[in-house]
Length: 468
Image (cartoon, rainbow, N blue to C red; front, side, top):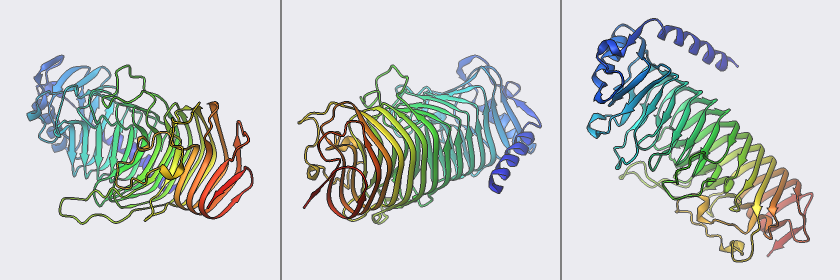
């Protein structure tokens, strides 16, 4: 509670401080409604003047402007007025920092308003495609109200940043490959809320590409759409993920009418993806109050061993760890038939995971030959890219659970629009499994559970088939 009050008052006084004086970019030479002539120099002059004066607000008035990298500095807010559109230059040389709005080692910075950033990302190639926002090792950041679209690659990237609030943003990013909505990379104390994100690639992504982990992250009240993963931790996981809450979010198919740049179906690959595959530790994750519409795989939890290194000369990371994960109050309907999965690998098990009040209804209609018929044929693939497409249609229609120490399933309801002949739940190599109140829409005459190498289990409802 103290931290919440501190955040509110800090944001309040920070906003007042930045509104002390406006620096209109027109007064520094920016050209309104001209998307040919660059306004980069003019905007950076306004930022410098604002910074030199001790801080304030750089005003981008209504109209269209074109720019290369804008370098944001301490105590400066960039304010995009309603009707203002800042277009990214198409010339790569105009982006020495790979971002339209860029900051490094800056403090008390802000991008706000009702205007928009347009990355003009269509057709851009290579690793130097600029993001719309790129902040590195910055502190006390506020991004509020703006619209962002058409980035060359990732839309916005926050790397090694602290005390960040991103609120009430709109993202529509379908112009290029790798068009993530937002990437939170090795950040601490980060709040993302009240936002609408629709992206070609992953929607909301937590990463830790370096030794700094993602810690104390809150994601809430967002509507997310993606051709791939709507909300995801991973793939890069070197620094790990700790104390993550994801709540009150709606996941639904993209509204884009343009085919995916990866030739993927509209409904998306996965709803919630939690992954540790490059070392690191994931601990203290709570996912609650989520509605998922029409994704192929509602829940994907994966502990693998892809083993990406910090750099070329670094040793390969050891097996990572995933533990103390809780998911509750999740509704998924009209989903594809990939099935949800919770899987470790023989060298590393997922520990202490609890799922409660989960309702999943898939499309069903699976017949022999359309899915992996034998649980033993589900390949480990611990070095592969972690994604449900690796297996596609699993032999279970509800949950496939493998290499887990302790797992609790409570008040789980599973169903299918069309009859599905697969087993509802398969568990393999589990130390302890506790199930309370598994409810099936069409119980049928077969087994509700197929278990192999489960050392101890308590199941109060459903027929269990044990395999020796």
